[in-house]
Length: 173
Ligand code: FES
Ligand code: FES
Image 1: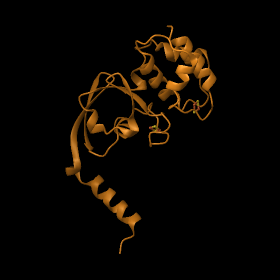
Image 2 (image 1 turned 90 degrees about the vertical axis):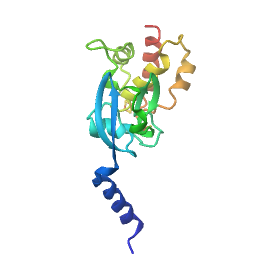
Image 3 (image 1 turned 180 degrees about the vertical axis):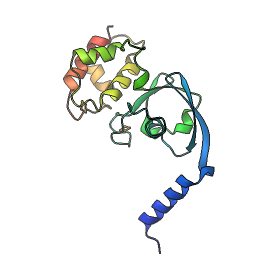
Image 4 (image 1 turned 120 degrees about the vertical axis):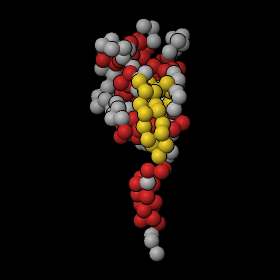
């Protein structure tokens, strides 16, 4: 009898190799349409990174706990690891690659540089996408409100004081 681990692998391989399990999906990312053929189970995060090589969106936990995969969907902050790619069709997806306007950095990006708000930088795209969605069009917030709103974005390098300083500055920009 096949053990459960091998059975899972067998099922996964079967799905991956069967083109009938794929659906036509067009994702609109940073203003550009990307037609894809994807299995219905593929997360937006994997479609971005593996299919489209938009690797700025980071895979940290892959379980909705670190915020590293934060993108914008129709202007709202969303975790790409918990979002099915097929459910994102017809929506405006923005990734870190689309945050700057050409050569002009988003005010948060510029503030992160000024405040040295990163060490390894792995969490930085998620921090920027979460903060930019949250601050967009909103009145300035207190430090405590920012810390609460950003509590879902973890930084293993503990750059939190500099991240907070950058957001405090950028929200007035
Ligand atoms: S990779 Fe999505 S929340 Fe951690
Ligand atoms: S800068 Fe390294 S995880 Fe945040």
